[in-house]
Length: 230
Ligand code: ADP
Ligand code: MG
Image (cartoon, rainbow, N blue to C red; front, side, top):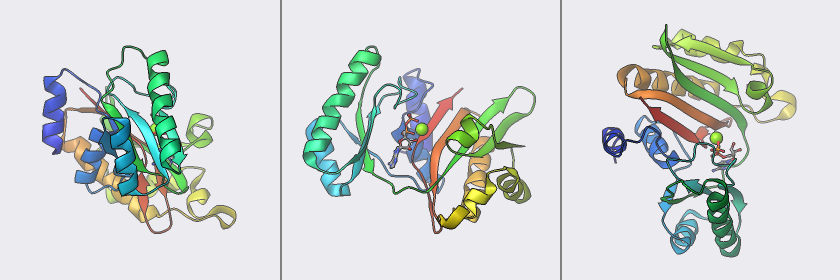
């Protein structure tokens, strides 16, 4: 499905929240690499997709009603074989029934377990005064506890994308702190510009959250994505 079709479908169903799979389909269309999740509608389908993708895989509940998938027990990481996957599938369904009994669940997303990288967050939200604004930060404690983030107003210039990454205090982590693998900063700048351009041209988008993106020395991949419509 194309971005326009995804937005039209959601509108028809009076949904403001896109699923991870829909959100990542849009990112792929923008040229932003993702973990390419596939929607499985049964345990058997999840197993067959996992075999095609290759273990280890990740299972996540797929529902437009569930915003924080792990908080609801809807994410299982690093599944290495069919038995683990089958158990994870049942556990996800049981957790959702317990924690969000009213959620409409369309299935689970099956995707490759991405290797660890530098965790980055890119967000888009709308300020009543300035309109769409982009946020950049490092994942985990950097954003949640230290509020170490940079903001720029859309549309971003190349200079904005360049500067906002370098102005966060955690920037040395992206350069490869204490022998750790660095994150590819030019590719992150490119994602910022793509999200900016998309937000600028698509007023129906209210909020975007690429959280986390894993950055490696040679590439970057969006591991989770959430898009909210107006
Ligand atoms: P949510 O934010 O809705 O709880 P996420 O999709 O972000 O769910 O998953 C929670 C965490 O699991 C992520 O922050 C990330 O650390 C890890 N994770 C999710 N998907 C993958 C993946 N494909 N590969 C590796 N780690 C993942
Ligand atoms: Mg997330």
